[in-house]
Length: 84
Image 1 (cartoon, rainbow, N blue to C red):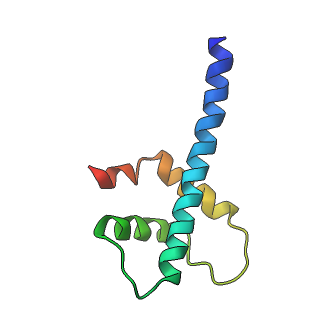
Image 2: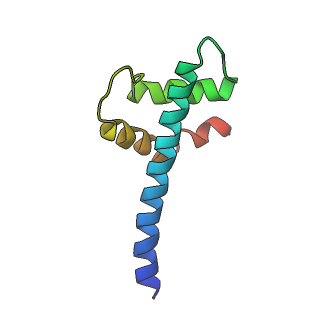
């Protein structure tokens, strides 16, 4: 049972990482849409990190590569390092 649980957990972690990446992309788009309002310092740093991989969405396009790029940043602990 342990091995099947580990395999399921691996898929769950990948899905969670993608969900966090999507949430970050949505938050950054919201920040763009609410300009000139500003966010806090840590949120601004996270915004800048996301925007290095995913430009502002101005027209309809696939976000699959953006999600993957931000998901990789999540896996590499780029965002959690902001909190240390």
